[in-house]
Image 1 (cartoon, rainbow, N blue to C red):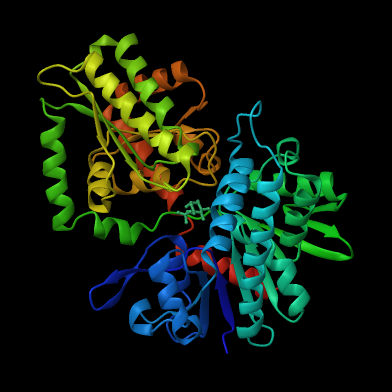
Image 2 (image 1 turned 180 degrees about the horizontal axis):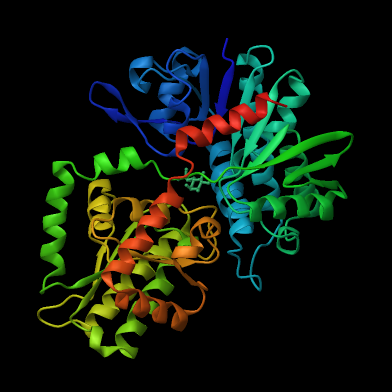
Length: 479
Ligand code: G6P
């Protein structure tokens, strides 16, 4: 039976329907490469949810235990959760409530409204968390370590501890954590249940010190828990149990990125992008994001327009490459936001574009090779989220950049804690300030750019995914 278990909403494999059955496609990301660090022989199991119909069909075979051929050898158990329960838990609570709270995205005169629809969705969130806790309790070996991921699964540590007190349980939040005044928008019983759920873990870990402190402050404020400090070490005592608080700042995977960024498909995309940019030696301001409300893409476009208006000398001389890939399109507010991104980009092009210059080149179809090509040619990287757990783009661009880029970085991104010394910091709400930072970034002399970029890349790769994962596991086992 497995000694190491990982639980997350999205697993390492997704299925689509094909003529001859189901097609499996493996995904990437920090967790996938992190888990690979424990080696193929180690007895590890990844428990995840079926996200769509094809996943559900796969999850119905063999108790959800996926064929190793589909997963690249990784043992995966995919849970067949009823579609309406999944939709309410994932869209209704995880993405529309907890994500909004931690990223502080509400327009509070109108929302949130916690009423009957919320109660129904929250009941589904409990059911969905219980399905994970049951599966983990069933499959974990005696004394195994279980690493539970993110805001989808906040109740799992508490539920799992009640079922299997022998396990070592860790919870990791990949998002920011809201400060207490904002966290308390949640109904009081929900606010307490989520904290108690996470405190069911032996260790609760975060991407930065700031989010760890916010979590501890919420525990003190909402639950009356005791927060203990011993030097750097932080822990929360509640109802006779201690939960250690950890910080692990996930870094970029330099070896993978550098190799991948020099393959022929990326070279092809580079040539195509250069064509679109046009002109002689035009500079580029690059952004690559999911079209996510927290990423602040629209204000980024406004800042670029402001740059052209306040500094007309940049007209014809700079192009904004904005890649905004669709995300969470089941939610109306995300669809509206996506439309607003396109509308704003078109408006800027109509206002300022000329026969020979398109100021904003917007791409909305996800293409990893093209993203890497943009990273390579970026003169300036614009990373201006409203709030972000870490933001790996801020770490990836400096690693891949050919000639060295200047990073314009929101002070509300987790990455800011590690990169602020060599980035240009911005307040994400301040369009004028962001435009000024873009101007300063474009004016940075090449040698200074290259030097700063080298230091950014070093800081960005300090904790690569494999080490990030092993550190968490070792810290849990050492308790
Ligand atoms: C981002 C966040 C993660 C989160 C994920 C969910 O990557 O940083 O905290 O788990 O989004 O995205 P999904 O597409 O699965 O809803």
